[in-house]
Image (cartoon, rainbow, N blue to C red; front, side):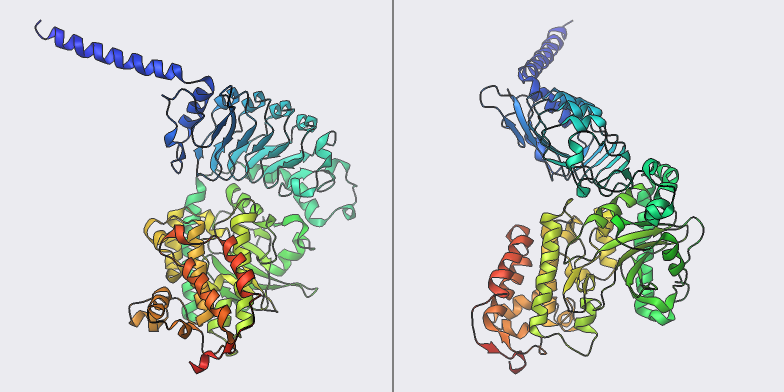
Length: 593
């Protein structure tokens, strides 16, 4: 009995603690409670939600949240690019005064909550660049104030709800690169939007994209062969959408291992010694062409694929072997064979390829389509006659002059800047190197293989990059954490810039003997004020101001601190203002130094 008062006091303390906690939760506004539910559903993030404290009176000081000053009601939720993963809680529909919802470029999955239809004050909704699946909720048609709606680059399926045609205030609308099917509602506001609002949905039809099957003539001449084939395969394609996402990881790991082996064989044995690399296509092969980018039927392409063998190999890289595909009309394309990727492209792989196929830019290599067969998975790219920058710098007798090198640097910078800042979704390349910069006949640069590394988890991508032999391009923090960022791409670009200027590979033997790489070599020369010695001896008439500005850009890009590196937009601005249009200056011949 003597211990009873102590236990009673402990019990009383716990009761008081729970009571105080419950009172604090009750003190939080209804909008705050809805956001707490939103946060509870999030599985992972970059830490932006750590300051969301349930004991606060309202959520108006929480990061990413904006409120009306008088009513304290939430008017905006802005959480784009914060690595948020998980479903969206249905309680988000309780934010009745919400005007802006920006959750784009994260890793959200599951269905788009139909409860968002309750947020009738919404003016802008940005959900692009996630992994949402299922249909577009018809309840979004209740959002009469909506002006901007973007759900592109997800895994949405089903039809476009007719109710969206009632959103008369819509000024921008984008459902591209999903798995939508059926006709685009012809009545209402959606009829005002053009092709780029709907591209990348192979089962979607309407005047903006293609004629619907029910309206098409029975004559095959009334539509493209590829369109006809896609409609005939619609049921088969719908079945493929049910492939489990769990198969993705295992299959992609096979890509990493087997592509490395293919690259090893090519480098060690030479292309004429590689056996068993012939492209084998059989029954069940399908060809998908993005947005009519190839004027050939599936039959014509497959017929050409069947003639390819090791004689047509023009290269090998981290993802597979590259072939030269010449059509009967003289057009030539590059065919990248994804090595030993058994089981075919699954739903998420196809989704990523659709996204990559929609990205067009002067300084990017154009992905035209892909071929999926039981034995070979093939990506169809533009063929660039100039080969790779790696070959031009290190394997050819004819050397690149200074002006050509500047032009290549400018093109590569613009291509990478577009991926980082302008395309949707934004893309981190993860493997910038000279062999991934291709050249056309005029030595204009094109960035290639962008987006492919995204199909691997960050950890696997990190490992794959190392074993593929691109160690010298990796940023220090990427080496330590395996987490790729835009700033790690900037570091790789800085290494590439030094490689172009010097004509030496990042891990040249002369550096290794001194315990350095190309960045360490630059730092050593700078410490002794001998920076000009880094210029390739084959370069003549190097302009002093141009060189100094270029080296300053490179030094910023390869800074050991990511925060000190410029963005690629800033790099392009510097190149355009100080390097491509320099002031008159003396020239010097690097070979005389």
